[in-house]
Image (cartoon, rainbow, N blue to C red; front, side, top):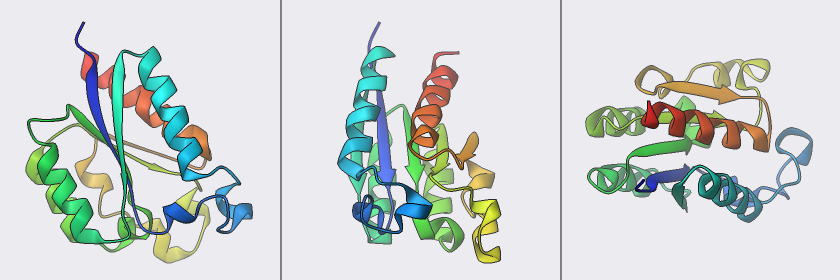
Length: 147
């Protein structure tokens, strides 16, 4: 079986994980999350290709470039979740199965975090389980791609 290729996108400020508001986001670093995702992917006969950017256009370009290269996208758009029509439109344009994840439960936080522009164009959303949100999201995405 050919390994699946999954683009993993991390949005703004996620490079600060481990230092940034550990009470909200935990103490796990982005490098550790990427390592855990690679391990889970390997066990599920897939590969992950992580990219973090604080710049919306870089993330949009990566989504466009995923077409024909990756079979699915796992995305934590960070604050862009609540503001970016551009990311929403890019995901809709490439029409690749995509799962949205968040470390914190965005629905238990400030009101402005309750709306996701991305949710209507993804196959599912997982939030509130810390690092497990990423791992569960990856497992769900791979299961969806294999079925």
